[in-house]
Amino acid sequence: MRFVLMAFGCVLLWGSGAGAQDVTEGELSAEMRFQGGANAYRHDWQVETGDVTCDGFQDKVAGYVSDDNPDGRTFQLVVATHEKGVLVSEGVLTFFDSANQMGLCGTGTPPPKISLEKLTGEEVREMTGIEGACPMAIILEDGMCDLHYYFWVPDWEEDRKLVFFRN
Image (tube, rainbow, N blue to C red; front, top):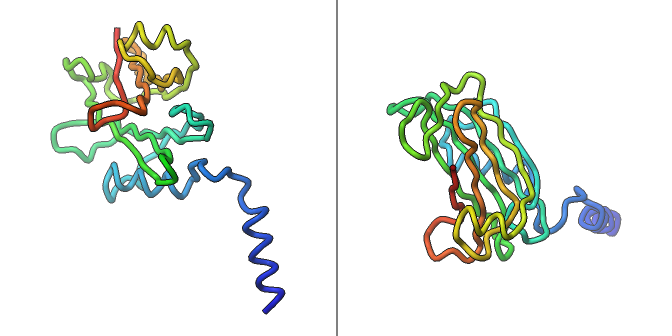
């Protein structure tokens, strides 16, 4: 019994190497299913890891092209993070071949590229008009439209934490 307790203690101390607030692959998978539905696992996800919430811990940003929506082909973007020790996520569903400001111009073939880029606080204020947005930009590029920028705003008054910007 003592050996089992010692082994359990070692696992806790030297476990996965992830910090207490870093998002794991398993947590990302659960949030992708929550945001994207039961078929999310079938899609080819792009995943980026970085501190997009400016809390000092590694978050996960993932996305995939989906034909599951009856209204047309979409790109599902999900940000998974921890807030006050609780796993949270926010998803953005963007349609392809759309004249909507948030729409993507391409067809989804090839899929849009997700990237992360650190901007200055001043650049983010100019883009969003919001004080306090995390300057780590989540960029969605379909190769045909202006870049889509998303910023996490921790103290945003709205229900959403991601703020969208496009030229």
